[in-house]
Amino acid sequence: MENRIQLLEKIWPEKKSFREKQFFEALFSQNLKNFDEITVFPKDIRILMQEKLTWLLWDTNKIFSGERGDTHKAILSSIFDGAKIETVLMKNARGHWTICVSSQVGCAMKCSFCATGSMGFIRNLNEDEIVDQYRFWKKYCDEKKLEGKITNIVFMGMGEPLANYKSVKRSIDMFLSYADIGATRITVSTVGLLPMLEKILTDKTWPNVRLAVSLHSADEKMRNLLMPSSYEGFLKKLSLWAKRYFEVYDQRRRHLTFEYVLLGGVNDTEIYAEKLLHFSRKLGKVRVNLIPYNATDTNFQPSQRIENFREYLRQRGVVATVRKSMGQDIAAACGQLVVNKKKNDDLYGK
Ligand code: SAH
Image (cartoon, rainbow, N blue to C red; front, side, top):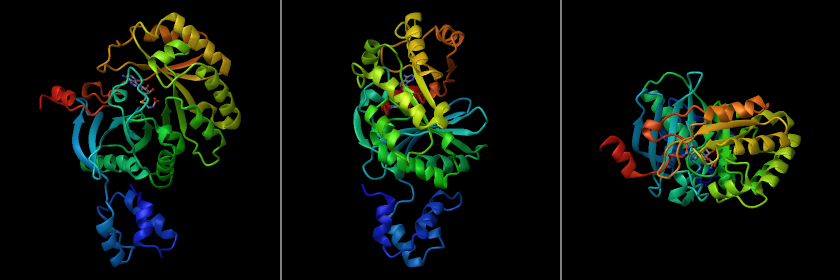
């Protein structure tokens, strides 16, 4: 699928370079609704744009809103091939909005506790399809007159962002240039694809975003069991990588977090807390974000030991926070994102 820049090149090869900036500024502008309204462009070009380009790459399939009105989930289908993804809008602590974007249709990583994993990998999204999730929510906030701005973006929807490195990076660059969202307000969450994590170390143009690595266990066997993308020797390599990340991007130290979903009776006991402690100590001061497990079709149970787990770490000097889980009533929480018609129908009796 050609991206907008390539299409624009075809329509308007003789354009001056500042035109591209104008084009994207218009796309991200609150007030415009189609290409014909970009009046800084000549009329014939606008007509061509209307014919050859698409203003929004997603059709709305369905929108679910949580009872408190602080979480909204949309199922969107691609205007090209009908592929469905999910994206979420949730109120953050400062009363503004965080959006959770998908980077792929489905996911190849097959984490055993994650609903998206069960649908398999279908395709990558391109950068325009990623930024159009933001543009979709911006329009939605506008139309519904929701108070607050979209201030944060997390790549925690469907897919493994680093398995779609180029498009994810380009989409971040667009957010930074046109959406008025700073790099520290963007988080890329990854299963920990080491070759791509390595690439980040040498990629001088990788943006200064927050990185969250899904650890979920500091025990090799347990991690392999939960995350088939893991392998023997992974944790050692990951900690070597993290040390180098801290060296290369010293100022970003606080921007690396390890995520740990707590699964009842599986990885939430003291033995596993101790293993996590050792892993953290090897790296010095790291941040751990504990995630309550959100029910999916798998056999896992939420943990009853979240507080004990956190206290164990805290008393030993590890900065551990617990993620507030939102959107469970509309299956929009982490790991619940799967386009599953039956489930959504059951939930809403439609
Ligand atoms: N592929 C990326 C993004 C996945 S979603 C990654 O692996 O990081 C963001 C986070 O939600 C990940 O840490 C993921 O492991 C976690 N997650 C997946 N399923 C979950 C579930 N059912 N409950 C809670 N967190 C879950």
